[in-house]
Image 1 (spheres, rainbow, N blue to C red):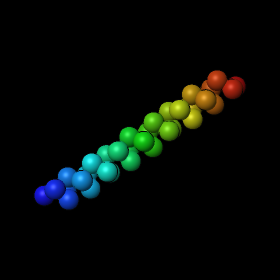
Image 2: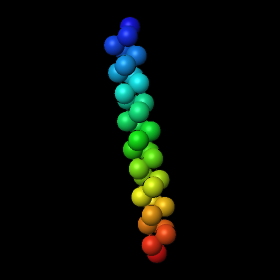
Image 3: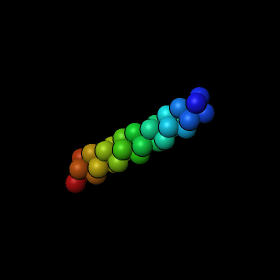
Image 4: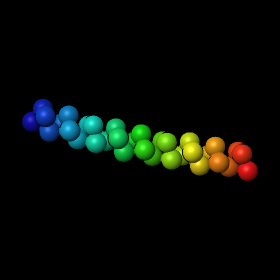
Length: 33
């Protein structure tokens, strides 16, 4: 049970991180253009 929670939590963090990176990159792109 705990391992399942950890795995899902890690997956959630990864998703959040990639989403955040995408947003930051697009914002950066808009600023420079």
